[in-house]
Image (cartoon, rainbow, N blue to C red; front, side, top):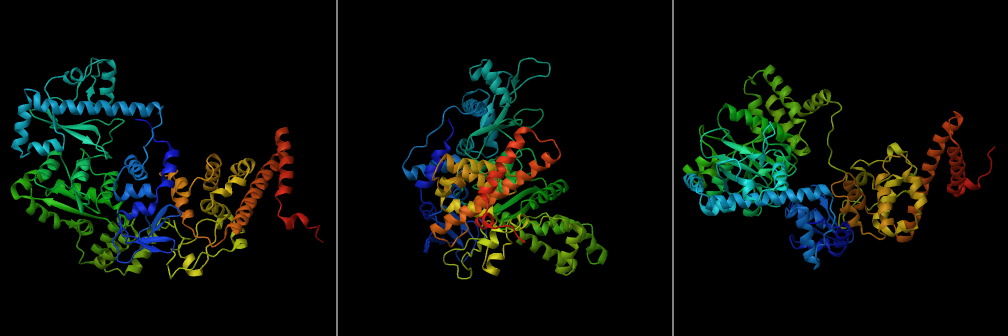
Length: 636
């Protein structure tokens, strides 16, 4: 399969109205030129989710989420990128084209996916047809797994022996290399022929978010070690990112309230057999930040499941430390400790679904568990015990990215230690003065919804804005707009904002002017230069398409921030302000380069070409002078 052309994606975003996409899933109400709704990404009673059709994006003023029709499908419907493009194409009534000639690395990945898929089907066939497959089926039946659940999870069987898989898939040197690269064949250190990695094992396919098999896990049927074996790291599979059963969970439960994270394959399968399908497992490793971020895209709450012994509690504390790093506002983590000697599979077979779900509902909150564990060996009825608790807890709380949850955790620590919250904050600042406080992104500081009664319109003071020193020309504090009724922007931000409102402004900007700007090392020019270059390549490209092209890049958030700024200027005024901002930036670029060249000329190290460049820039600078500067005579 080839790549989807970017030009098609851009055209698709222009064809599809973002309000149609969102409106099919949310109840939208007209609000001026926009629409508003209750945000689907956080709980609220008053609508703060705004859809802006003429700019092709949405933004929530409550939780800060924003994006295009494409990102909405990816976040709300939990589609991957290709699925979302295909869904939009279906709405628009067009076919998704594919570019031929993908890079060799992509072609290699496609071949690996194909060979892993073939192996997956071969393993499933062996479960049904190989004479030893009956042993595997008997084992599954003994664990309470029926045929339907086995089919749902694609459970297969790897027969005993060292050279079954390669023979089953047709053999050959090319196949051998692909199976080795996919982790299905292992080669001895002495260089002998490779052999089957999975032998006499029940096979559990590991699938990615699109449901494609990318790796396998195997449970040994006979004696020996290891009992469980996973595929090694491959170009397709990274165990710190993938979760067993997540693809099946997403298919089985449309919008789960919580997802249970367990330890093993049979725990996932056994719980699904009992009717608890919102479950997945880490693959032979402790839960990682990537695992949790992936789970939080599926459900707002993750429940870790641990044994109730000392090892289980150690694992739980490690998981809590990992979770603290990704605890954004609006998500939660709980911990479920099972009776000693039980695992989820055995326990749910003893108790049944209802009793197990009752345990889930009583799982302990992360905050409660953390403070209990940190105080386990302390006497917090005395001052030094409370002091040591604060000393242990503060660095951990400080790692929490969600500002609301972080504040609540500090408040709870203040209650336990009886340290006034204000003094606790002072201690925290003293401990880590350079800490990144992680303020909420100022992505839409200059943008006010049409019906926002408490937000004044965007006011624009051209002289004050354009003359701001560069070091002050970055993002204004979030409160600037509401406190003063005025947003001041840097020259490059203003020019980029106007381009996103009127892309045709780029038509009159000569390539030579863009090259002069590109030679300048002023911070913040990257967004403006990217817009100018893309609009020269594709004149009139819609703002939503410009933004979508940068999805996943550092520029994406900046483009959304600038696209959201409302400017109370008519078309003619916009042209004048854009020209003025660009002129000032260009003048600054020329003067900066001239200064660099003068240093070399005075030092006697300038080349002939640099002398010529200096003269050319001097002439250019005269043409770039402001009118009042060009006509001023000498001053007394």
